[in-house]
Amino acid sequence: MIYLFSLLLILIFIGLNLAVFGIFKDNKKASKILLYSSAIFFLTYKITEYIYWQIVGLHHKVPIEFSAISYFVFSLAVLTNKKPLINFAVFCAPVAGFFYFLTGIATPAIYLFENDGTFLFIMATFNHALLYLSGLTLLITHKLDRHYIRQAPLFTGISVGYAFFMRWLINPQGSYVILDLAEGNLFNGIIDSSAISGFYAIYYVGLFALLAGFFFIVYFINRKTAHNAQRTAHNGGF
Image (cartoon, rainbow, N blue to C red; front, top):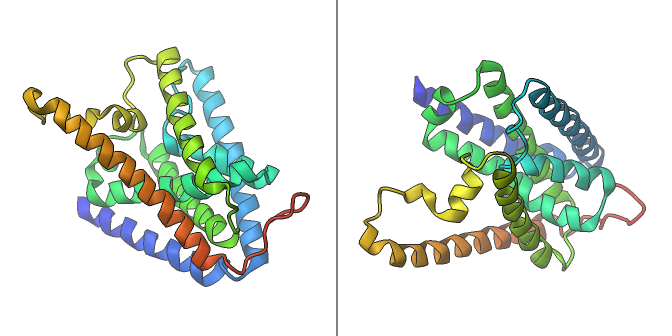
């Protein structure tokens, strides 16, 4: 039963990619509708959600995780058409969506048994699917400029710094994936203490190499798929 969920996520993931490259890539009107409607939906839903958490007293429920930040970055990038935000959104939105599917496919029990209820579980899956769909559409329909290679890593680093600050401010004992990755906590209790210093050296080299790889992959996909796309006008839209 658990792995039926993995199969479902695989089918959804394949369907999203087929939709992007079969429908939205060469249909400017459809891609524009998708991008703007997704941006408005994310802002409306997420702002409402976080206001609700504050009203009921769950003050630690704020956007800290990378995907939670990505919803706002993507939405503001589309609605404001600011180049620095776009250069970050084309990275964070599809990557956040991709890793949600990757984690769910590899370890479905985490999503099925460690969630905050059926409704929020369904909405989390829907939101990440829409984030991946719209983020990938943005990636392949908007030609990046030369500042991407500097701005995307910079804003990723700022996102990590923001997560550290927010954890310190509202939930010092909280566990967040973005910070577990940054601190190397995913391997606590696995690595022998005598080898821990050498392990962290290898871990951070590997982590930065992985990030660099993803930055390059995003740039490569954009160059291969959006080479005929019109650059977004400073006073125009998508």
